[in-house]
Image (cartoon, rainbow, N blue to C red; front, side, top):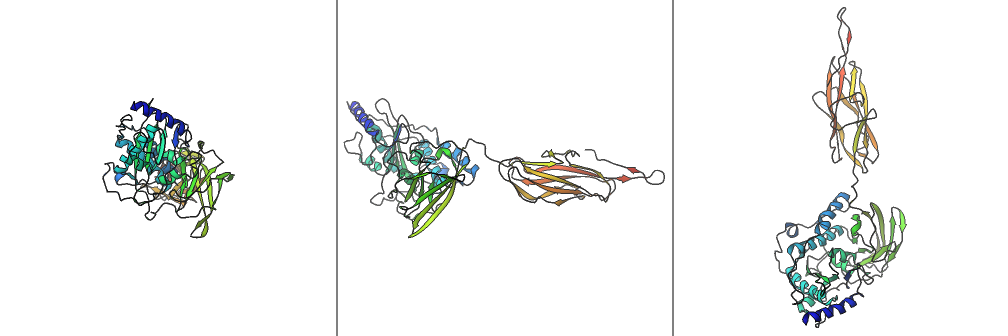
Length: 497
């Protein structure tokens, strides 16, 4: 009878939840929690587990570096996928159970990924007491098929601890499962989530401890997978810590994978008046239409929200690579003075090859292979033969055949025991060679002694990932004259390698 009663409640809840804003066809978000009305007790310090990245190191990334942002996405966002929940509870007996530590760690990794990208302290940990209470809240949401920050006492599997957690948590449920839970809160879709309150709590700079409760579905009676992410801790009213920028934006300035760019963009500034602020955007220099959402303080930091291209809140950001958007926020009133902020976001596809420099050195119009030890007159690595006192000069071209700036570490160097008769008479004019650009340097060979054969190595240090340094050998020979009869007869000696 108990299972039938729960099933009936779930059916009612399923009907009710279709009115709850959804961030996809099967996942649903409720309203975000509001600031707690009373201070929270200080959490007792505890050793949560032994993973060193959680205990000792904050996640850090520089989104201005494309390669770093790409690697960070794969290691921390994609790296959080595919971990089994391993729930130990039971719906029918109202046993909230627990989940595996590895599963909790995966949520924490995803959470701190977003915080690091946004430039806020990314060393949040999960507090055991919050986990336990959030687990009971998640069970209530799963069994009853509804989301509520103030669940009624008549709910099946109601507990006071679960109700406390419900009032302190972001809440989500889905059918049949939930993937990338933190991303769901960051997306913050749904018609009534226009102020992105869930996102604001996920990125709140003061937060140091959270908790998670997770319960899977168990069809046919319990259709909903549920999450309760406890977002309030005792640090909520403390002074704001330093952040990378003085504001918190999503997507943040720099390179951002398109998979974590959502229709709602946001700009948060603590204690600023954004009620009269406006947003303008351009994409690669062309104007972008913008729909500003109704300004709504009261959740985390004061935040302005808008939708580029008038996108629907439940749309998916299109796949694009290296599309640069310039955002300008005007009339941000701080300490009664209006200010403006401008920053750029470059949306990229992590699956695309990274732009890289590619060095190539040419002589006489022919490519000289990196590491070449067989000088040839064809590519001017062999200077041929010249009389003493008659110098020969050769000019070499450094080309960047890649799609990113090539940086040279100057000067070009000559190394080897026989380099005394070679001299670089003109170094490259620039240390930075743009994509498809070139620069040149000139080497002179002026032998000092009759019959000399000289070999020297040219070294060009650079930031090509697999041709640094770029080096090759050059060779030259001095003429010698001998007279068999009267004393002198021309003879040429060539050095053969």
